[in-house]
Image: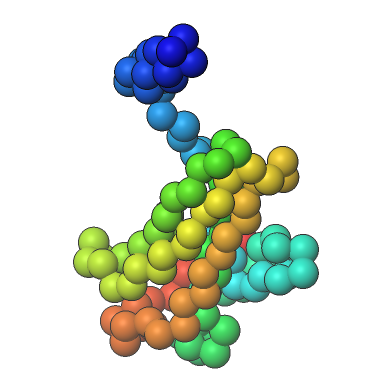
Length: 119
């Protein structure tokens, strides 16, 4: 009976336990990506030809507590308009965290007419 009472008390007490959260430890926008090391790499001029040939990578490093299972998104916008969403499932508990990336290759023609530089 005592075990049942303690279990019921723990179940009621769950509302006072804050939810586990995940947090971003780093992020990057890069022209290349080392898939084996899971790290962004390189720099290039953002010319229309370079973007259409190579695309762009978005890299996100996440820390997630053990047992947390969550979905994050890489949302690609152009001039404030959502163009693509990539959903990534995060399963917490790795001491090293979770490193995710998405690779965009289909850009609107208006973006390809703009030149810029990243590194």
